[in-house]
Length: 288
Image (cartoon, rainbow, N blue to C red):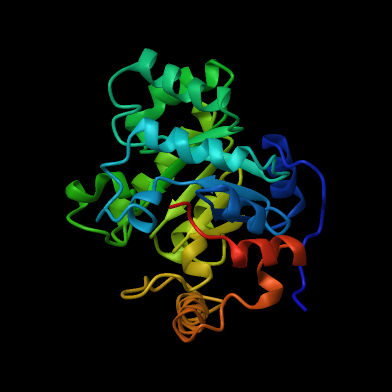
């Protein structure tokens, strides 16, 4: 029998995460892109991220850049229909916050109208003006520093960030700037553990790490990575807790074999007629 590890049934809110940071309680966040994933995750985690990683994980793209507002709205709506107790955060996709303050606020507000509790966007000092405007519109914002996937072409690939002294100090400065701009939390991705720990120490808001060591206020992974649903290359920071791909493919193979052998469906999986109707059908002949 599986054991569901959950320490609270309270509705998780933005202030909840700030309180947990002060109390030293670690925060658990996972991605989810539809209702089934949300129902599996919600009893276990504190935060559900409707991530633009849906591009790689579910939609077959090589990176997150092709994801549109319409795509993100579609997946967000599927998650919030389950009415999760976890805090639901949605990624603002590429170009949804790059073309001016008014459009950014409109896009972020649209996510809240569809049930999100907060939005997440990538970037450092260059996003301060935008973040101030969004927060000023009463929309909670989680920042995202380090390896920012929407900048994959500028970075020359998915590479660890913040390894030089200049890059590390720039990240720390950006973290403080984003906090000052009103971010309620920061996601730190693909940076050295020591740097993430120092950022967490300097900030009063919580940090969520992915490939950023154990010193963050909490951790996030992609749902499919935790359950081993993706074959091929796996990032160094991923730990899978099931071999989900093989388990699910094995189950499907067993069903296919039963179909081909004629053992599915069985009598108990089929509907029947009364004896009288069955007899009538057996004797029925088409009119001539």
